Length: 194
Picture 1 (cartoon, rainbow, N blue to C red):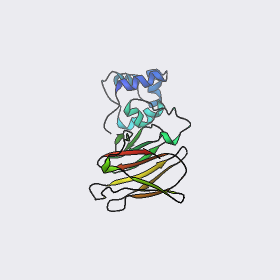
Picture 2: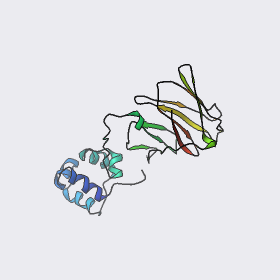
Picture 3: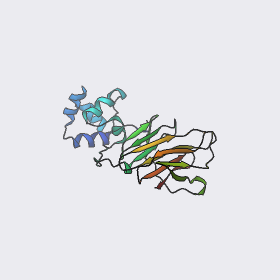
Picture 4: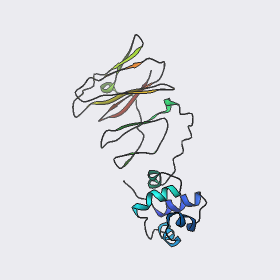
């Protein structure tokens, strides 16, 4: 991971759960002096204790390492509020129906911010029968290519994975209005309301 749990984080999360140092120590089978050492930055929890510590504090390990609990306030999960994450190491593409704590290859990923496309990254859209047909003149070399094209409506998120040296095109069943996303491996995420 790119960071480690700090004493201030442990103290903040423990106090938020209204636990004493002794209560937390008892759950982890360590002494309350050990908890005190962690919280005063005179020591760190062993890596083998991260999972039990996170469980005792009722959060995930990535949340513990980040120092904050992620609470999804968007219980209705409108897909138009989707967040898209791309791992810079392995190229994994992750989609969530709202903000989330996402990590891949040991890196905490930020949600991508979509922007309007410039001329070099624009796509063409047309309706053919009941399908939205999307194409792009973008180069599809091994070094520079579109990684995916996705279409989000209020209740669906569909994605077509693209590959270098393949065609930059995708077809989606037309289900009304939504947001079209496409991702360039060099220039990031682009979007357009359809």
